[in-house]
Amino acid sequence: MENTDGGSVARDQIEPGVVRGSWWHALDDGRVQCDLCPRFCRLHDGQKAFCYVREARGGEVVLASYGRASGFCIDPIEKKPLSHFYPGSSVLSFGTAGCNLGCRFCQNWDISKAREDHALSAAASPAGVAEAAAGAGCTSVAFTYNDPIIFAEYAIDCAKAARARGVRSVAVSSGYVSPAARRDLFAHMDAANIDLKAFTETFYHRVCFAHLQPVLDTLEWLARETEVWLEITTLLIPGQNDSRDEVDRLCGWLVEHLGPDVPLHFTAFHPDFRMRDVPPTPPDTVRRAREQGLRAGLRHVYTGNIRDEDGQSTRCPGCGDVLIGRDGYRITRWRLEAGGRCPACAAALPGRFLAQPGGWGPRRQPVVL
Image 1 (cartoon, rainbow, N blue to C red):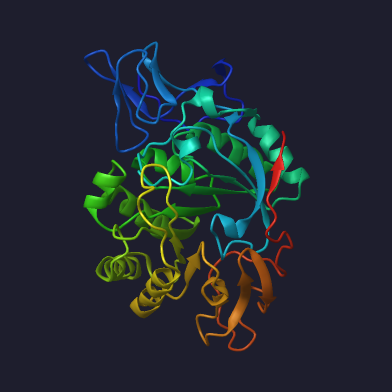
Image 2 (cartoon, one colour; image 1 turned 90 degrees about the vertical axis):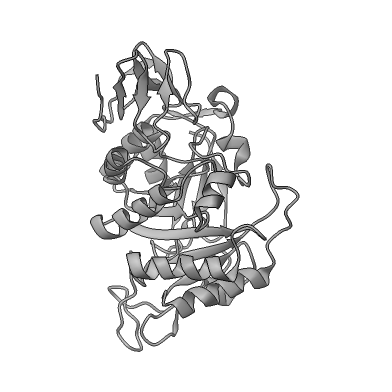
């Protein structure tokens, strides 16, 4: 029996932390196929999917990490990173366990590569997440650290509960998701940062155990078919995806297929997980990539994981004046007028803005729910 609905906030649990999954169908040979992501894992009863949190059980697919998290923390929204989505605001961030990619350079490998029973130490209902975010004055909740795609039922229910409390929702994701699940998940998101890990199929296949085209499809769909505010991040890894040619092709594709206004973040790699033998990204490489993006026609290209006030500040797409100055996660200047317009030339800055920036700053505050 196929199950493709998005569920509800009051989702029945088979047992604590386990709910019936969406986006699957039964096969003629007795297995079930998970239709959540392009892996389309085909599972015998009792077998876990690649992500390790979805499992075939009793002729259906279940999610075994519902309502359970690796921890909650209030962050600056710029850390996601989102530079055009309520700058300076605070966001309640959390993730679960597992991932549907196998990136050898994973910066959160202790969470994304963990089995659910080894990493999930916190628990919260969707209503509890929404209440905590609203009570702390957070503008949004972010599904992050690992990928909300694999805990989509939980993310959807949390987003519904958050929206009912006036709190927005953010997905920080690889974008590696099937069209059906993509539609259901992002229908409840206000913003997304999609991690475009490289611009070659070879990199995705060899380093991430995935494919590039489904991610490009997600990016185009988000930009053209939804109202979700979209920003993109590419982690530059020395000798892997940082060549001038690849950066030029990546930026050119974004301009052609998404338009010049989608913000792009180039961030510096640090050795981790199974790529500890690769050196950190030189700051000059990150700055050079930003310049390539600007030359390609992108209007908002940012640097991350390095000290670079110019590369982290937001400029007017019309006259080039600095409208939002940043030093790391701290806002140092604010010159936006009502409606997100430049006071010098009246050009509109794409994004979601309030009359004044938030004042959360660079703090990181763990939260117990």
